[in-house]
Amino acid sequence: MLGWFKKKLGIGKKEEPVAEEIIQDEKVSTPAAEAGATIVAPPATMPVTPADAKAGETLPAPVREEGPETPASKNPSFLTEDVRVLFSRLKQRLSKTRDSFVSRVDELFLGKKTIDPELLDDLEEILITADLGVATTHELMENAREKLKRNELSDPQALKKVLKEKIAGFIHSSDRPAELVLPQEGPFVIMVVGVNGVGKTTTIGKMAHKFLQSGQSVMLVAGDTFRAAAVEQLQIWGERIGVPVISQQSGADPSAVVFDALDHARKKKIDVVIVDTAGRLHTKVNLMEELKKIKRVMEKKLPGAPHEVMLVIDATTGQNGISQARLFGEAVDVTGLTLTKLDGTAKGGIVVNICREFNIPIRFIGIGEQMSDLRDFDADEFVEALFAENDS
Ligand SMILES: Nc1nc2c(ncn2[C@@H]2O[C@H](COP(=O)(O)OP(=O)(O)OP(=O)(O)O)[C@@H](O)[C@H]2O)c(=O)[nH]1
Ligand SMILES: [Mg+2]
Image (cartoon, rainbow, N blue to C red; front, top):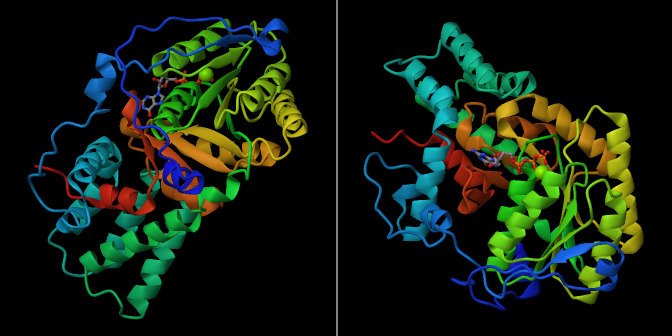
C-alpha cells in the first residue's frame, strides 16, 4: 500500500526517523481541544523500543537461505538481500497454513505417478480443511478435472502447478491499485473497522509507523469511545511511534470526535489520518448504523473522506471472515482489507477465499505482534511463500 503512496506524492520528504529521546506527552490547546478533545502531541523524534529493534526495524545482516530453493529465491538478481530476509520471515510465519495445506498436498502426491479419482478426492478434502472454502475448492477441483479430461495434466506435480496458478489468479483478481482511493489534495483519511479483537488498533499503530517511515505526517483518531482502555491503547501507540492522537472522554459520540479531528488535520496539513473505531459484531444492526453515521459525518466534513474504509479480519476465525467482509461491505463500502494473525493460524486459506469472493484488495497482512510484522500484501510473494518448500 505504501509504494503507491510514495509514488503519488513524490515522497521521501524525510528519511526514516531514528530516535532515542524519551517521550514526553504534551497537551496541545487547539479549538478542538478546547471543545473537549485531547490531542496528545508526539515527541519530536520517534522512539525505537528494544522490542522493535528486535523485530527487525533495522534489519539484521541478511542471511543467505539454506535448504531447498524456492522459485522466488532462485533468481538472485530479482531479490535483494533485504527482500530475501523479509521473504524468509513471511515463509516462516505462514508455516502453519503451509503445513495444513501445501505440505499435505506434497505428502499426498509423494511417489504418485498418476492422478486417479481417489487422489482427487483426497486433494479436495485437504483444500476444504485448509479453509479455502467450499465454492473456491469446487472451482479449483473443476479446473483440475477439466484439464485432466483434456489430457493437460501428466502427473501430480503438474496438478500442483495448476493449483498454484489458479490460486495466484484468485488472489490477483481482487488486486486494485491503491492509488485509486488517494485524494487529489488534503489529508488521506483511513477509517478502520472490524469485529472485536481482530487487531484494528494494533494494525493502526503499525500502519502509522509505516506512513511515518515513508515521510508522511500522521494523526490517529480515537473513534473507539466505547471502552476507556481503547483510547489509552491508541495513545500508547501514538507515544510509541511519535504521532498525535485526537481523543475525547470515553462515552463521547465517536462521530463528534471524528468531526473535530478532521478539522484539526486540515488545519495542521496532516498527510494521513487514521481513525480507530470500536469493535462490533457485523450482525448487530444498531452498531452497524453507528458506523454508517461516523462515515457520513466524515463525508460531510471532508468531501471524499474516508478515502479508504479498511476492514480488519482475524485470519484465525476462518470462514466467518467471509460474512464479516460481506456485512461490513454492505454497511460502509469497504475499500481495503487487512488480514491479521496469519502467523498463528493454519487457516490462511481464507486469504484465497476472500480474494475470490470479493472484489476488495488486501492491503496488508499481519504476521506477528511486532511493529514490523505488518506487511504490504503482495499476491505473488504470498503465493510463493505459501508454496515454498519447508526448510529442513
Ligand atoms: N499474532 C498476532 N497477533 C496480533 C496480530 N495483530 C494483532 N494481534 C494481537 O491481537 C490482539 C488484539 O489486538 P487489538 O489491536 O487490540 O484488536 P482490536 O480489533 O483493536 O480490538 P477491539 O478494539 O477490542 O475491538 C492483541 O493482543 C494484538 O497484539 C498479528 O498479526 N499477529
Ligand atoms: Mg481496538
